[in-house]
Image 1 (cartoon, one colour):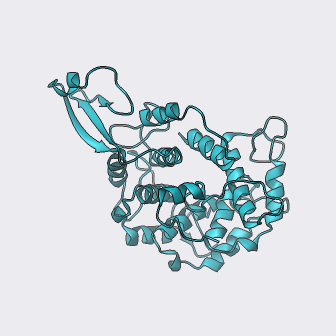
Image 2 (cartoon, one colour):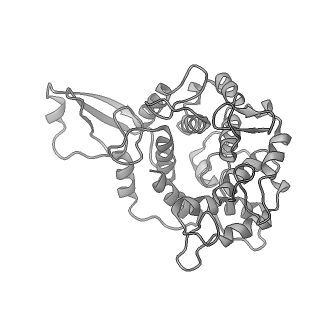
Image 3 (cartoon, rainbow, N blue to C red):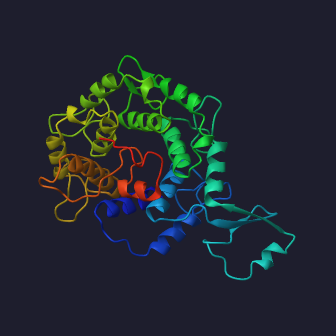
Length: 333
């Protein structure tokens, strides 16, 4: 599912036409399980991150989340979705059969119901039924609930308290879990979540921006933690975080841009994690997303003509505006 999102969003940034949209939607819907969540592939267990990627992908494809689906469940535990994930034959064969019961719900209702089953008392969210907890899952949950216009379900005070419990006073950054080493991607997740729940005022923005800006190395790229190697993905995690904090001029944008260019495979296309490494769809997405932010802050001079990304939702701004998501009209820069 993450690969689908990386592909769709990368094409969108490049204004590249996407073929076979119906087939892509069909695949995504086939990954939704009876619990309302999405797995990373068909017949995979639901996970909050793959659910987040599914929602973002459907949003990019302009899918109507309010559309009603008929969900059938057999007494043997088998789950069947009638609409969109099409079943051949007459629905009455199932509805009038005592071996089945059915409900009518929208994808929005099912996804939100699933997400809320993962909420813990302290404001954290589990990733799946197995109980792993970290700040990624809070961001995925809050982003999905906001996108689906169900943000009234978000326990803002508890979430803010949980996120702050993962803040390192010594290093002035957020870790994945309390007491562990701060990580740039966790900083992005926490800042984006605090932005969406309107709690950014609870943090010291300057100190966090200091930590983020110190992640830039001599080659222009960012590392995610102190004394670690650079990686293209941090170009997005860190630069988008600095935009949220309105401190994007604290780093050398030109050097960062050149680092991403060095990671591009000029023969085969794509972007890798480091120069001279093999490209992949994940780092291609993060590289393009970061270049989009840099490009749209640099004005028309030597423009790459990339669609502008929203630094919080991690999708193009035009998609956010078209869908009229919360904060769609907020000037992030």
